[in-house]
Image (cartoon, rainbow, N blue to C red):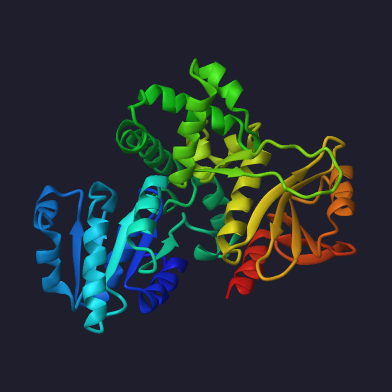
Length: 393
């Protein structure tokens, strides 16, 4: 088992709160991590995808009161959304008896409805922890591992597959499962799987580009609001990221559309039929895929409450990622490149003049770190992730 960074976050959250929600896409390792906690102590594990376990919770307060002295793990909690109200009552009962922390570990796919219901029912009683696909600091430090993580993506079974072919098969099955079953639970009325596959594939082709819901809607023969609703769901399930444009009163004509990324690079490659590094190296998505891979790793390591955006003006100034770090007025700018061979363009220098970030980084695949201009340095992706993780504590 690969040690997960989120394990320490979950353990700390359980020491502070009665309930902790571990959220992330399917197959990202939530159950594996939760079962590690179960093996550490006397925990009750209930899989709410199982009819037998759901039957046990027909009268949840009566059943769960018997386990008030143990951690209760509730997997696939979105299958019983009404359970949150009962958990609230049990938590409040426990508080009156001095049982204030470490009562419930709740697992589920992140979605707007689920988060809203959990927040409303368990306000002040629950802490949210996100489990993301594997990051560069969770795998071996050699160059092969980083390139494999980029090619195969961070879902553990995809990354750890015996071969690139086996990894691609896993990812295609992962996509099929989401299209044929999981997304149907979150998008109502139900959408044909082939429509969602076409949308997902178009997003893969547009990786790192400006989002145009109207253009996607025309290609799918649906309305723009419908496409927006589909993408909202994919974002809520942590499968797609909309990176907003930087908002500031700079008296510049700023691009107003968000950029769109499929968050896992392995899913991008599976949707485009890219099965090995040789094919990826010659594919048009090569640069955009690397950009998305780096951005996801940086934002996973950044301190909580970091505000992320990109910067682009009509005049050509551009920066791939702008991070507004919490607790200060610090602004960090990031340009993503596979290597430094292409140099820094005029758009980056114009963005530096416009934004005047405290620090700027050119994040590359190579190891090492060295300055290239005042306030700007080249840095390897692993070193940059480690730098941000250090800020996050």
